[in-house]
Image 1 (cartoon, rainbow, N blue to C red):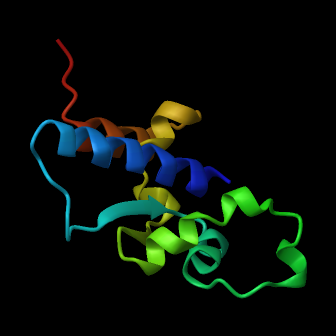
Image 2 (image 1 turned 180 degrees about the horizontal axis):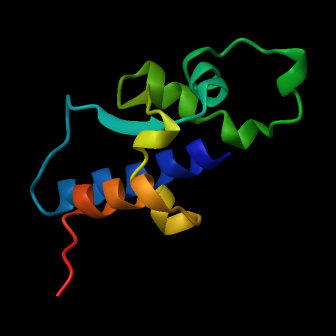
Length: 106
């Protein structure tokens, strides 16, 4: 469900970029996720008994992945910069996030 929401936000950003003259035609928007199951569902439209609870409205992202408008790629959890903004982290993961985001201490 989160991946579907990310695609909806991506569609909005693609439209916005087109509106300001940065056409995205022919360019895939990269969506990173650490959920291999979500990637498999996004890339394979076959119905599975274990996914019958997922509402049809969340399956729309498959058409955008198939049309190569979005490219869903695995990003390991330890490389997710946003984890520090959504959950408590300490030590090396925190320092990694601070460094990669270019944050500095005054």
